Length: 326
View (cartoon, rainbow, N blue to C red):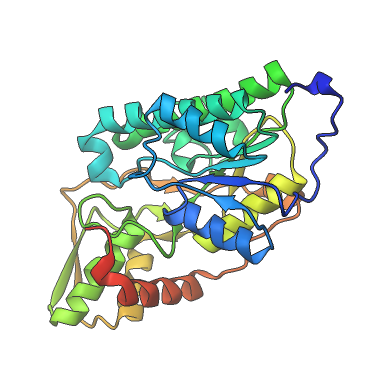
């Protein structure tokens, strides 16, 4: 399929009866997208667990997309983790993510998928990028060393999406979310991102009656957080309203310090002890706040406040703690 087919690729409401493949449909973002699509009336949303389909297996990915023939694809599958995991296993984060992305995007192209949304991460931007970070900051400086392998993989996905647009004229897009949280997050004590790690740490301390909690770093870095349900809403909105080669930042446009988010989570979980900070551990990037002007121009803004989102996420965590990934 190419632009020369004479088809109209102007962004418009997606066909609710078309096959819609969500890669990574059980994860934090993918599961939120499935909930959103089903709530919006999509009748044929498909996906496979990693046990059913290894996205690193190129032949298996081509076979699956050839079988289901999706009209739309959201690529939300990825190997993800926090500072510790990224620093410890850079080969895994680079190799696994490049293979996942390349396989899904190549198979989507081979099977004439009309509309693809590739999802990345705000870590693609330089460590010392001007704040808030604009989309045109991409590839203008050095990356944060603690997650550079993951960032390079995601940058490769953006460039592949742009290359498909240039070579084949297809309206594929990329969206770069800020720090996400919500149901089906990874709450592992060693592999999770900062917010779910803090939720687990403070909830366990609250339950056990511990007198103190120790967090990494100084607590001074500033971070922006977006609930996964808001992210899912933004992805569908972009697929129906945006068509451009540049990736689109997806966030709230406001941030808080890690110390402030820790205090809020302590309050929500009912922890009444002391919070200590291990300053021998790394802080990561000093600030990561996205410029969401392009997203606003496309007609979308975040709806779920941080306090509301945290209350909902802590409640979900407590309801599902026994079944969570450890």
